[in-house]
Length: 578
Image (cartoon, rainbow, N blue to C red):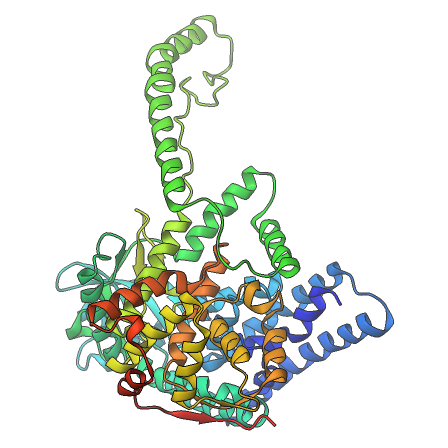
């Protein structure tokens, strides 16, 4: 069967499953009849059409890739627009699915990426009302001397505006929550949980963790505190200001539904990367879409690579320096010399002989000078990815305070190449024991220590039908480390999870590290979208081992007694698979 058939028939279901491929999520709605009707009336025909096309491909006649692409183009935009209008958990799941470049087609990925920062915004009147409710007795103009009506971005629970503080004249970013955000999330979570219990019990564990996290995310005072702590931690570890910046919040202006923070310059990370590669593709006589299609088809045919194998950060940095040096030398000694010494003579000669109706030379400039060379310098993607992975490794394993939802809309590409870390609403805090055991787990993943991982699982209460350690090892690798072909065998997400479930369905599992897994999945999706697949343990294993040594708990000391001593309080999730 065509790869398009595999992804097309499951596309809409995968979106609302947040990347897990659980088609039942498609029909998840809140308790309101209006949202229920909107969801069914939009999504059901999409699935039906894909299913019918899949059956045609299987039993009647082959469906070409062009036909699958046309089907994607027909439904992706309108379906994702509906997700954006529904918002709540629907847009959250869509954000996650945007990174599944090996599962969804170009049209779906393109449209789903809009959910990271382009959800339909609220009008200024609604934003004004919220701000004035959060600052009693003050008009918006009393707080801000200027306030841009057009938001910088709009996501699942709120939108961000550029403004200027009246008190200091400083430019700031103002994040304002949608009035109905709390209600929508509550209704969506309850409805999706009901359907998960019936049709996708393996997702209840993840859903419960997300439910608790979303409650915290809806209170912006939590995010203000998170920004302060994360900023302090990043400075302590040497990341800030060298590799990243975390905006400082204005505590006196931050409330449950409004967050005011420093305004960092630069586009969203993915937007900045795509702008360069779009220009690069144009110079090569192609388009970014065609380049992405080629890369995705390679993933479909060969599986996702286990890790990036292109030029290193040092090689790209050397190339960047060489290009800047070349531009400087050419501009100074060649173009500069011509413009200073030759161009005036050319202008004088043209004027005296009146050889043209104007003084435009073959260089295209009216004054006869030549344009200075300004080579577009590529972003150092390996260095950016290296920073992202190390930053999040330290957050998880050293600080125990990390961004559980690091999608592409949560990072900025600053003008000097550093990364702006701008969204810490979905921040998870681990207990000391949880953090230490996370370190043990990532060292075990790096060392491929299947026995240690299985020992940790059984002691933590993991239970499956056949208690197959090989199946569990694959689950842990996939959930926390890599979805490269060494693990998946080249299968896509849906196929891989179905295969493991058929071999050994689990029915009890602890949920302590669900959001750590969510962070890992998000980062892998983000870096894959940058054509730089990663293996988390290659970055985090070293950090984890250093932290265990610092604590006087080297990896070799972790026997059953020590694992029991540091066992955190467990929350076991039960499912009925058979």
